[in-house]
Image (cartoon, rainbow, N blue to C red; front, top):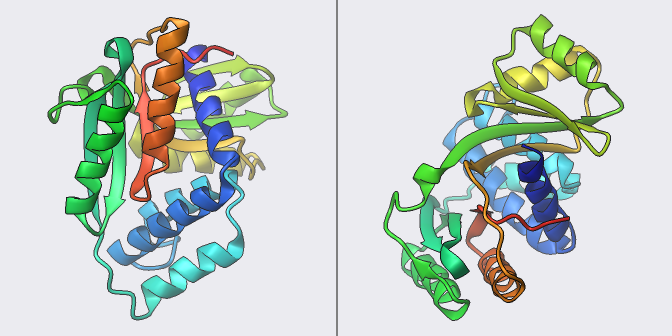
Length: 239
């Protein structure tokens, strides 16, 4: 699973370089999660997950508080979750998750990004069957054996635990996000290098250099869209 972790790192590094965009997207995601239930992470599991993810992207407290205050107050914007699936250069696979208050704006924008960058939109299910929804945590300062022991003691149901570049990565079912997080916290670990709910490809593909350049332009175009929250793909980006 090492290559998959590298793709997560690549994506995170890309987002870190565009902090204002990241913060804006998290603001919407926090607002939506808070509106779905109580605006209190202790009683709203979905909100707690979003806030934990936000920490790994260093989202400022002011932005988090503003989104929570909006959810508690008179904020009445209605957002819907949309998933788009498509293909990039050389048949590469892409999943786009969006939160939008105007589907008639979002769908054409996503389609246009695909069409202008060597890709094409697919129908629902045309790509997602080749990906697995996964909770991923990364921690530093602990050995592989230590992390394995933590998970065993907490009886956390994990898929795999691997070590790469001094980071121990735990892969688990999405519904185990909270259990894995609590297992770490019970051992005194409060900070994570990654804490994500993601879609991992079952198989990765390598692209020739020209196709990879075009593919990266496609991903950038999709991530630049205001309504797009996450973009997942099956391309091995290399080191």
